[in-house]
Amino acid sequence: MIFHIITLFPKAFDSYLNESILKRAIEDKKIKIKFYNPRDFSGNKHDRVDRPPYGGGPGMVIQAEPVIKAIAKAKGRKSKVKIIFFNPGGKLLDNQYAKKTADSYSDIILVCGRYEGIDARVKKVFRMDNISIGPFVLTGGELPAMITIDAISRQKKGILGNFDSLEEKRAVSHDVYTRPEVVTYKGKKIRVPKVLLSGNPKKIDEWKRGKSLKER
Image (cartoon, rainbow, N blue to C red; front, side, top):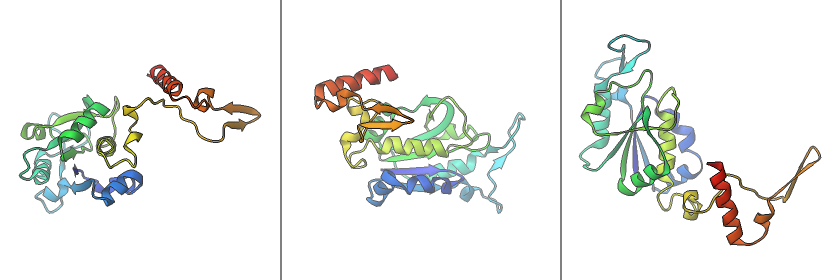
């Protein structure tokens, strides 16, 4: 699976992609990350890609043409490519979307905006999904792109060390426990729930399902 990332700030991804599971997946060639900087397609000697918005307003808008050229470069001649455009008003990213994308596409283009956004005419040129990671506004699309890479990658067998670690495929609670059985803090003893020490898989699964429903 190849993730093609359109971004003005490719170095923003360094720390996350160079740690833990995604680092191992890249080293094992299970996923590949490619970057395309719109500045490289600016067509001017200063590599400028931002201009004031039509209609007035604060900030700057990323021009359509450099982004269009970057997406075209990433897409190449491939006929089946998923293009994701990050937008606070888009469809909320969830595991169902991540799994469907992982099962259906080997090339995924992630378009990261900045400043006041990207000229909307980019969406007139390419068919793409408007995706949001939550009801809030960030300074750019790089964080949503990292989250999306993580969510989609973990749906592919071989990315997680143990595919049974995929929480959504098993009974799971957000509350987890490990040794020691009793933690003492300021004289207060905090114990692991007894059911988890019972050795009864059926009761443990029932407890986890019950906790999961309460947490929703």
